[in-house]
Image (cartoon, rainbow, N blue to C red):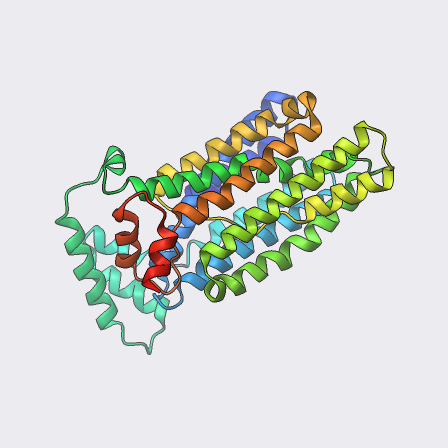
Amino acid sequence: MAISDVFCILGYLLIVFSKNSVWLDLGRLSIGCGIGLLSYVVPVYISEITPKNLRGQFAAVNQLMICCGASLAYALGTCITWRTLAIVGVAPCLLQLVGLLVIPESPRWLAKIGHSGALEEALQKLRGKETDISEEAADIKDFTEKLQHLPQSKMLDLFQKDYIHAVTVGVGLMVLQQFGGVNAICFYASEIFVSAGFSSGNTGMLAMVAVQIPMTALGVLLLDKAGRRPLLMVSAAGTCLGCLLVGLSFLSKEHHWAKDLNVALALMGILIFPIHMKGSAGSLVTLVSWLGSWIVSYAFNFLLLWSSYGTFFMFATICGLTVVFVEWLVPETKGRTLEEIQASMNSSLTPVSSGINRAA
């Protein structure tokens, strides 16, 4: 995490003092390296330091904080210059870098490298001085010992028959999420609003920010009550509807329909975008996710030149396919142990929903 912060700080400083586009590209590359590392390491760290009964809530709050930070950046971007915004971006990186000096290392990582004393010290710091950590520390040591006796896994092992369902679900969700256009729309929201007929992109951006945080908070609250599969399907369906509305907005503009209708459709469509989708499978899924994000973000402007409304209808189709994908292949994880989830993954590539219904 500290190395990631250094990458981000360096990237922001390159942008602040940029003299030409090369400096901007290098700065964005450095920030990309930092964010890419953080996007994988932070959830792992959170899962390793939190008690098992709070792990889901902590992971969900992490997503909420990401949404709040991104929304704040969007809001600030409507009233300050991009160089000033880059200076602002340095602040949280420095704050986290200093904060890392006083937070403990992951107890599970310390157990993995054989530092039993440091493990107990870190765990005591995390749980509080008065808490009895002996049982939890023993469980961590026991589990780590069992892991070390297992054969070393390789990336190619993921494609064995036993794991192909899990890989299909994890990678499939990330591919469908990214090619559904969520990141492209977030990155180019201001331009989309202007193209759709807004006099300025700021109004639409602020409206998007105002809706994004409460919707993400709602997703956090509903995560354990409604279950993961229903939220995934509602999110994908909502994104599909949003893309259709934005596509209709551009189609309306091209055919010179009522201007007020264009603006209303674009605003409604963008505001629907969605509650976070998450996948697992470690670095492979993270790599697929960021690669998909880069491809769609890079191609987005070219797609708009090809057909503005066609681009969003294409995104809507992919989001619609996501609903079908989740219904047929993604198992529910609510109230299930890791062993039960793994068993449902390993069974076969047949629809899991019917099996879940029979079990219920």
